[in-house]
Amino acid sequence: MSIIDRAKTHFESIGVQSIEVPEWKDEDGKPSVIYWNPINLFEKNKLFKKSENLSDVSILADIVIMKSLDKDGKKIFKLDDKMDLLTKVDSDVLSRVATAMVQVISPEEVKKN
Image 1 (cartoon, one colour):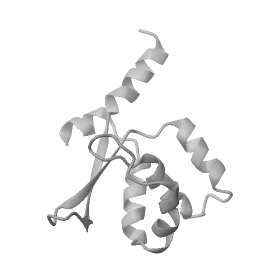
Image 2: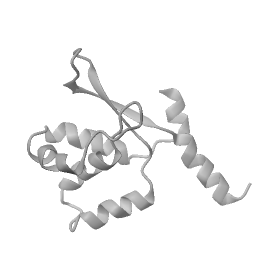
Image 3: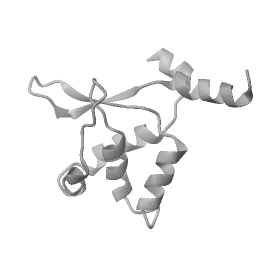
């Protein structure tokens, strides 16, 4: 197996990740669960191009919009939701979710969960 094949196999082995958001309870009082596929360099580049300044925290909303999926793999947020995410959502919760989405964990850590 070539090095590129090993690198691609590693990335594929990370798989779908998720985070429970206890602050965003569903109708039954259970934490919302947000899923996402690992972020790749193409997506990171797209995010960085959107942000003129890397200290612009609105990139957190962009990450959540770009990556958030439901359990069936469907997008949760639309671009139209950005202003609400920026102005009507707890910034600490949004930051925690976005940070989790851009951190790449090892396949071993995935297996532990």
